[in-house]
Length: 140
Image 1 (tube, rainbow, N blue to C red):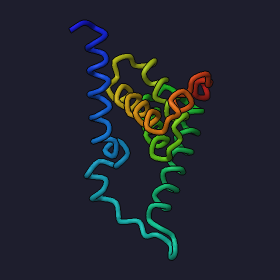
Image 2: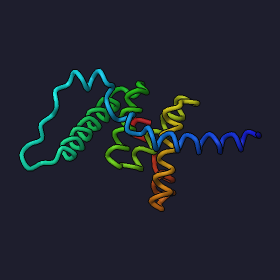
Image 3: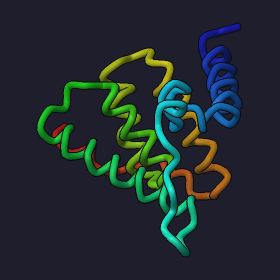
Image 4: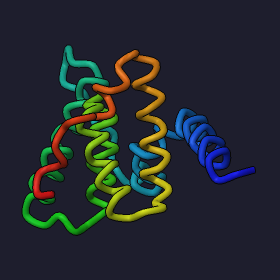
């Protein structure tokens, strides 16, 4: 098997693995779930809306933190996961591409980019979703 075939096989495997495990990237570790009290949704508001709002708030906090200090790849990964959860596909591609460039061979970025590519193909907007022709994240 040559290098190209191996790369194609790995990308396909990563996309399949991402489809089964993408939720694990966003969910907090089990210990955090056990320690945190359940969030109560305000009357008339769905739990999904509260969760989406919480993720959006965390994304905004990460953006501010990374604006001040952009060296923590774990923060970049968390921001990429948040963007994926919020379906901000173009922003997610920018962040995960930055992580892939900053840490070549990083498994998280490889799987995330494969997953984003699969999403783009399903949506029929491959070039747009992959952020072709768009600038890098702020501070880069």
